[in-house]
Image 1 (tube, rainbow, N blue to C red):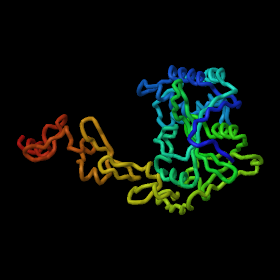
Image 2: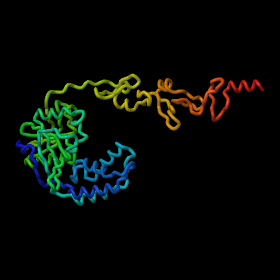
Image 3: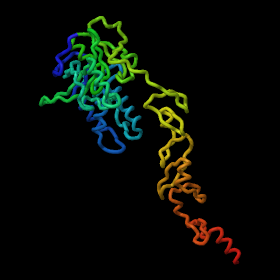
Image 4: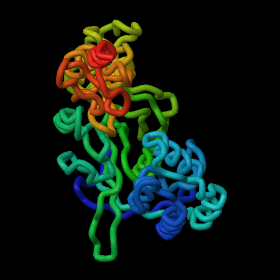
Length: 363
């Protein structure tokens, strides 16, 4: 399959499933900014732009209609930061009517294909991608083994190109595989544009690298196969890029029994545990250790109380029997009897027990 000339911007207009125009997206943006309630600040435009970047502009995909997919993104954002945002004023029905009004059956795209995967993190809507984080070596793996990037742009009035989406391309014989899409366009849309430009078909397939979809070459879901018909019988492809990765060593959590990998988990009560057990354990404010036991409330000043493990409470704080609580710097409402050294409560007894006994004997 002959690919377009590399590193060359291609402007391409296609007839396809209805896409929401840029004017329509701007109308949706205005509606969201007006009706979104941010519980902590008023910078609604940042939140709105984040939502719109993560939803393909196609009116309908296999994930549902545009308003339904946008509603899912709101739900995910709300779950990641509970209580931060209030979407109650956003009417999904009204959002659907608004976006459908601007859904067009003809759409224009600007894209290119490159072997140079060295742009900055987030330049093509991929700021959250592990290929610029824990799996950064995978970019070299792609470039060293014939891999490429399909990149999409937004072109403004002065012909400035701004990256908005990307995915990875790996040739396999007379076919190509696209996977790991990020940014404004979902994988289906990116494959649709390139397949129509090349005059071939495309379909969804399962993609792995040496049998692994979660290794260094992270697949991120399924992929798309592009090629001359027939391709309908192909449902699975192993890319086999580079050398086969050694199987990751895994350990059994000493608390729940689940298995976890090398870069996961931690230590709780001197036991090795998985991520879930580690995050559910109680963390001591003073030393940072974690335990499944209950922690002690320690008053660190007149207004604040923090949780200490038993060891830190005993070594760093003092127990006040009068108030039934630990104090980091001693009870602020108790003082020592100048004569006997016994603690006296300022707001209660004025004399320690020995003073009281002496006073009674005198009488």
